[in-house]
Structure formats: structure tokens, C-alpha cells
Length: 398
Ligand SMILES: CSC[C@H]1O[C@H](OP(=O)(O)O)[C@H](O)[C@@H]1O
View 1: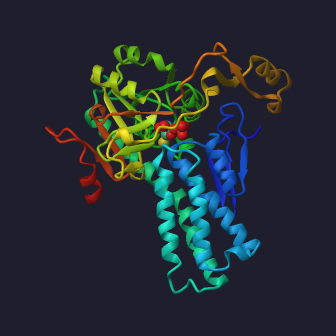
View 2: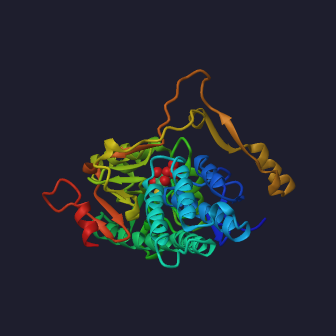
View 3: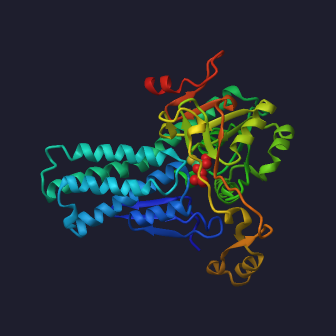
């Protein structure tokens, strides 16, 4: 079996593959994304997830489709710059219907559409196939740039976040800190390195991490399946806890900070993130533990005034009534036959049939419970006496 990889997105011009996160941590299988319909499907079904990764895969799925249509099929429907711009707009609109809460997809779609419209008015955009190819090339180049930019942004988030925690949190006798994270915000949720998990990586790399804890993150188990996988893979000292153990953990285990990602940060700092984040923020406040949101500035939505205006995605009851895993029989098969092909992930029913289910995928942590918002541009905090984050001012000056 080839070594497992944490590369969630593999791309070269005209070809995109995503790691099927429904099968992790048991199987490492890449799925080819041939265009926008595939891109929409892998995002909606959560084969790829995480706010930045969703935006990047959506943008690249359209880049692949455009490349094939223009270069290999010379599609007559895309013969002019205006036709390419209209095509891009329609495809982006469709991609935006895949998942509603993470703003990164909407931000990327808006930015890429503006770029294409501008490209269509440039001198190179002659009213013929060559002009159409120039506009398509502008889109493809911008979508490809998102991959490298995201990794760079995450490295900066990691550095700023680690420095902030080491400066402000209560350290253990060894000078290190213990932190807890929720959901998965690592390499699998981004182009690489990660946001909140990027902070943990940075702390570990600089010798500042005593121990990382991660929650299971029901119902989809991004914590036990994905974050635990990344932590083990990176050999970061770490422990998994169930979601309902967090208050006890804060009380007993000397946790310095909780670090989480974000799917959308409203203009006032209210933050939508994986369901369970709200109760983590409450218990952090009660226990006097730093509660830190880590996200690229593309997760900040100045158009949304506060958390009440954020659309929260509700997902299938099956995610609650069933749990995805691998059966012990399969494990025995692997040992007996030493054949990874025999490993199959399975959904197991765990709830009484007939019970009603409510399954919101996200909740909102009010800004009053958040200690700091760490972005790639720096850390946003409230000055003493301020009761809200100066987000607009911060963005304007960075
Ligand atoms: C680095 S952002 C990750 C963000 O995405 C997660 O949601 P999902 O797994 O449903 O896509 C979660 O809210 C994380 O904080």
C-alpha cells in the first residue's frame, strides 16, 4: 500500500483530483473531478470539505472544464470573450448552490467573476476564439493561484496564532501550552498546512506545544476521522475526546486555548463554525480559557452584519442516526489477508428508528465569547474597553 498522503487537492492544468474524505482515515482514494458537475457533487457530498478547500475545488473544477472546452473541444459556444464570461458566471452560480454557509466559495466566485469580466474588456480580448482563449486563460490562472496563496496564508495564520497564544495564554511549567481544537481545519480542509490546525502545527514546530486535544466532532466526525489522522501523521502529541467531555477537560487538564476555524465571520466578529463551536466558546469563557478563531481574511464577510444573518446549512438526518466507520471484521480481513483492498467503510445505524432529527452543520459563536480572530494579515483583538472587534478598520489598514 502506498504511504497515505494529506494532500486533499491534486491539480495540474486540465486535471483535478480530490482525496475522498468520506473514506478517511481507513482508505486513501482520490476521485477525479472532470468539471463543474463533479466539483459540485464532491463538495455537496463532503468528499471534500472545509471552507478554503471548498472554494479552491469549486474554482479549479471550472478551470478544468474551461481548459478542456477551449483547448481540446474548441467549443463553438465559447467562441468569444462575452460567451466565456457568461459561461463562467452561470457555472459559478451553480457551484454556489453546493453548500451555503462557508463564505469563501461566495467570495472566490465574486472575485473570479469580476476578474473575467475585466479580462473580457482588455485589448487581448478580441471578439474571436483567440480573445475567448485569453479570457479563459485569465480565469484559469487566477483559480490556480488560489492553491499557493492558501498555503502561504495558512503559514502566516499559524505563525501569528502561535505567537499570540504563547504571549497571552497560561503556559505550563515547561513553558509550553495545551490546546484544544474542534472539527478539521488542517491540510485536508485547505490547500495545505491548515488554519486552526496550522496554529497547532506551528506551536509544535517551534517547541511551544505541550499537547493537542481534538474533539470527535459529531455527527460527521471530522475530529476523530480527519484531525486525529493529521495529528498522528504529523506525530504531534495529541489526544481525542468526545464532544461532551470538553468542560471536564478544561476544568482538569490545564488547557490554555481553544482554537477553531471559521466558515463565515460576520462584520461584528460573530463566527459561524462547525456545530458545537458555540458551546465550546461558552465553556472557554466560563473557565477563563482563550477562545481563538483562525481563518483567512476571505472568511470575513463584511456584507453580513452579525451572526443572525448567516445561513446555517442543515444536513441529512442520516448523519445523526448513522455513524461511518470500519467494522472489526474488516480489520480482521486486513490482518489476515494483508490486503488493503478488503477494507470497506460502512455506515452503522445507532439511533432508534422513527425519532426526529435536527442536524444543523454549523452554529454561531457570538463575538463577545471570542478572544481573538487570527488572519493571515495579523491578529484582530478588542482594545481594552472595546466591546466589538474592529474588523473593518483592521482590514482597511492591512
Ligand atoms: C479550515 S475551515 C474548516 C471548517 O470547515 C468545517 O466545516 P465542514 O467540515 O462542514 O466543511 C468546519 O466548520 C471547520 O472549521
